[in-house]
Structure formats: structure tokens, C-alpha cells
Amino acid sequence: MAVVNDDDHEQQVKQPEKKKPETEDEKRRKKIVPGSLMKAVVRPGGGESRPAEGNQVIYHCTVRTLDGVTVESTRSEFGGKGTPIRHVLGKSKIILGLLEGIPTMLKGEVAVFKMKPEMHYGEKDCPVAVPDNFPKDSELHFEIELIEFSKVKVITDDLGVLKKVIEEGQSWETPREPYEVKAWISAKAGDGKVILSRTQDEPYFFTFGKSEVPKGLELGISTMPRGEKAVIYVKSQYYTESALMPVVEGVDEVHFEVELVHFIQVRDVLGDGRLIKRRIRDGRGEFPMDCPLQDSLLRVHYKGFLLNEEKTVFCDTKIDNNGQPLEFSSGEGLVPQGFEMSVRLMLPGEVSLVTCPPDYAYDKFERPANVPEGAYVQWEIELLDFNTPKDWTGFSFREIMDDVEKIKGTGNRLFKEGKFELAKAKYDKVLREFNHVHPQDDEEGKEFANTRNLLHLNVAACLLKLGEHKKSIEACNKVLDANPVHVKALYRRGMAYMASGDFEEARADFNKMMSIDKSSEASAKAALLKLKKEEQDVERKVRRQFKGLFDKRPGEISEVGTNDRGDDEVTGEKLDKDDLDNLDDHEERTHQTTAPPPRSGIFAQLRKLFTSVGLNRCTIL
Image 1 (spheres, one colour):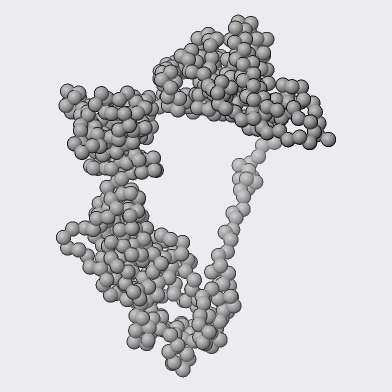
Image 2: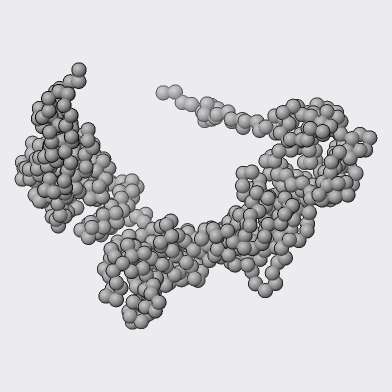
């Protein structure tokens, strides 16, 4: 056997580093020839640092001919508006001479750059537009005063909103719609003229998403954590009318000085404005890392109100529960869905006010006696603390399997209560964790494989109840791929095929069950009887719908019959408590139900009808 030296191996494995593609600015710099750009320092700058790519540079620019005639200027004394230019190196469109020259300057420096035409607007394919009367074919002097440069955050791709941080904030969470925000705000035009003074009494209060501040300012504040101080540069297209200030005519850009004092987290939990969580008191830690996002044991105090004029209190744990908090495990359907969804987004010690619609409150949960049906409610919730279950690190195989039985048992209970999504989540969680479990001997391996198969079949049962027939079949296939003669998997897949209208596939699975295991004959025959009934119902429905279609002679037109939704309508059977098979190791039940059969499309119905009357071998001539 040949042995490869480590050094040789490293040389063989080492891949040449891929060169980054050249940027447009780098390609332009290659055009520069000696003597086309000359620099003379008029006034030295201060410090040692110079502008780098990604920095915002603010500078005054005056362009003159070689004999001193001013062509254009940003300075008011030379006919300009008095507003300096702002560019972001590497982002903004800028003439080649300044692209090369400005990075050589210090803050406060004044320099004159002598440029040949190809270094300014005379460059071929110059990205910067210029008026027709501009002498772009002449050699010119560009006098530049570099006022300042700094790192900035680019908020919008068109550079219409930029942010320069003056003082870092206290955390990383930032406000968004529909948060409520308090901030000190002042504003100046680009030429330094004050257009909004900072209020002296208290910070400005506004709600995100309600156009209460200019659009560009809101975009900038959305990147600020609490306590941050920043300057937000907003160009005219983002300087919109708002309650904060009117639009000042003739102002091309506004510099907002902002100190974000505080914001209240307001979350639209469902995204449709119905389930709103408003934080009243901050909790401990960082959102969302320190929230009970995973299934946990939670301790909360809460007070429940009806949204009527009296704000009727229907529950208060500090009074009704002898002052003891409510303790429950999330992910087990023990509290209303809207309650749990909101608590999962809370920090320990946080107090929030939750407004909840009836379908996420008590219309689908055990309703307190004094809460009417269809009632919107509010809960004032305080999350005291929570404990997240330990992972299986360091657990023995037996400890892991004991924990699995507890989780599986919870899932089975949720299934029996009709909470199929929650039940499926429990089974899925264990299956994910099983990827990190490695049995040590054959006995453990057999127990592990059997448990995993049952979990897949439980997932299939949940998916079948949720109408996800294809996914239910896929879950069964995970078992049958490893064990093609797994009777329970064949049964479950057959039921999924039947629910989806694939009757032949269902029949094949039920017949295969009987050929493998005679003890499953009763369950299989019951399923085949149900399958026959389903086929007859579909055939009867299609015959009724297309009554008379084949009774006419060639050339005659028949009207398709309508389904009067009377006795011929196919409906789902009532759920039966015995439909919980395969959720444990008990024997298969014989009385099974499935989700209502799907409504077949017209072509599928015709295909089944043709088959039933013996026309499935016909060809189209």
C-alpha cells in the first residue's frame, strides 16, 4: 500500500484561491496613465487616516479651467448652493480622478487635482452625467476640500438613506412595524441650516408603519438599538411628508440627528393584525435568544379581560389561584393557542398585553364560564421564568428511550384530542433527535428501529388527519423502504392511498397485508370493504354528474347532469375514537376512518367511470 507524505498530501489537496472578479472601479483605474492626474496640496489636513472603500466622504468641489475661470462649484461664494457633496467610496458614481485622488487626502485637507479629460467627464463611458455645455474635452483643475469621512451603514441600495453611528447602542434588537418608539430628533439641511430643533421637554413618540416620521428616517431608525446615537442622511426621494415635520421646498437632503431613547416591542404575531402582543415591561436577556421558543415548562401570572366597555376580568391568577402562578408545558395544548404563541416570544420578567381573536382564544379551547362564545380577549401576562428540558447529552440509551416514551405519550394524547399539528410536532422532535442516537448492541438497535418506525407511522396518521395524503404516504414509505413487509405501514399507506383516491394502490397494500400476516386479515378485509364503498360512491357520483352523456346518438349533444348534493353527495364519516391505531403497539382496530375523500377533477372522474363500464381499453382514433 502506498503511503502519501503529509506535505505531498497538502500540496495535492490545496486548491488555488479563486480570484475575486474585478470591480468596475478597478477596471477604470487600469485606464490611468502617468501624467493624466496631478495633485497639489493647498492646505494640509490633520491626522493619519485616509478614506477607504466603503467610507462616506463629504467634500466641497470647485472646478476651474487652467486659466482660473470657475466652471462649477458647490460653494455659495462661487455660485453653488453651499451644500457639500456626499459620496460612498466603492458605491457612488464618481469621476475617475476623484476616485483615485480622494483616498490620498487627510481630513480637512484642501488640494487641487489637475486632470486630463479622460480623468473627469471626458472619460469614455463615464458613469457620471454632465451638462452639454460642460468643457469635458478640456484639461481642468478640481479644488477639493475634504470636510470629513467616516464609516456608514448603507440603508438603501440607491444610497438615498445612510447612517453614521455616533455612539453605540446597548443591545442588538431594533424596532420595526408596529413598534412604538421614543427618540430625540433634530434635523438640518445639507447646507447646515436647522429645519427641526430638538425638543426640550420629552422625546418624540411615534408608531412604526404609520407614516408619522419621514420614510427615510424610519428606515434609518429601524437599524438602531436602544441608546444608539446616529446621523441619518436622507435624500429627497425619502424625505416624505409626516406628522413630525413638513417637507421643506428646495431641500435636496436632510441630516437627522437621532438618539433612540426607548421602544416598546409590539408584535403582530399572526401577521394579519388580529393577535397583537405589546410589551409593557422589559424582561431579562436578549430577544429572541433568551425566549422560550422551544418547548419548555413555563410559570406565568396572567389576568384575562373581555374587550367590552367594563373590561370584565374573567381570570386573575394572583387572586383566583391563591396567588400561585400558572405552570404549564408549552407544545402540549394546555393553554389557548394565542396565549402560548405570545408567551414563547417573551423574556423572563417581561410583562405583555396580548389582544387575541376568538379562534386563537377560547372558541377552540375550554372556555371559562364567563367568557361568551366568539369573544375577543386580552391577557396581561407576566413570564416569571421557564425551564427548557435537557437534551440527551450524557443520557444512557435506557434514559433516552424512557424520555421518548413520555414525549410519545404526550403526542398520543394530543392526537386523541384532535390537536394533530401539536401531536405531529412531538413525534417530529423525537425523530430529529434520533439522528444523534447510536445504539450499542443488537437489542438496543431493534428497540430503536421499532420505536422509530412507530413514530413515522404516527406522523403519517397526523398527516392523514390534516389532509396531507401525499406526505402521509411518504412517511409510510420511510418505514417500508427499510422493511417492505411492515404490516402496520402497509395499512397506514393503504388508508392514505384510499383518502387520496388512488384505489388500486390502496387495494394492493391491503391485499399484501393479508398475504404477509394472516392475523391482519380482519383489518385488511374491513379496509377493503370500505374501499369498495368509496369506489361505488365515486362511480355513483360520476354517473349522476354525467347522466345521459353516453345515451345520445353521434352528433347529438347531451347536457352534463348536475350534482344536486342530495343523497348522492359523498361526505366524510364521523371521526371515531378507534381511529387512534398505530399510536402505540396495540392490535390494529377494524373500524377505521380517514379524512373525507377528495373531490376528483372531471378527467379523473371520467377515467374512473370509463374503467367501471369497461371502456378503459378504448383508444382515441
